[in-house]
Length: 148
Image (cartoon, rainbow, N blue to C red):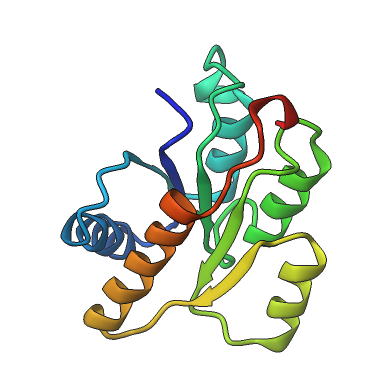
């Protein structure tokens, strides 16, 4: 694998399918790796548990992170990503249905690169995912590999 894939941390299978569909409709062909809870996301990024032996230098281009997750919540996932020297510069976009001001503030305080509320309507959701994909995969200049 290479660093042009997306890590989606999302516990709702419908939202995972919608995200895949929105990316496909936008002709964004980057692979999508989905983790269904915060623990799985951390295990994936840090090559632990079921992902032991995975190449830890193989990081996604961007992480799309839900906040309301089982096992380990999204804010704790973000905290651990930022606390690790190898992953601290990894772009993390909070993609959540939460409209709570405290979640927005906490996300940015912990180093989120962006906070996007998931639209309920599929067309609006697809447009949001397309915009995220175009920005983070095509326009954004990723940190150099040595910085990860």
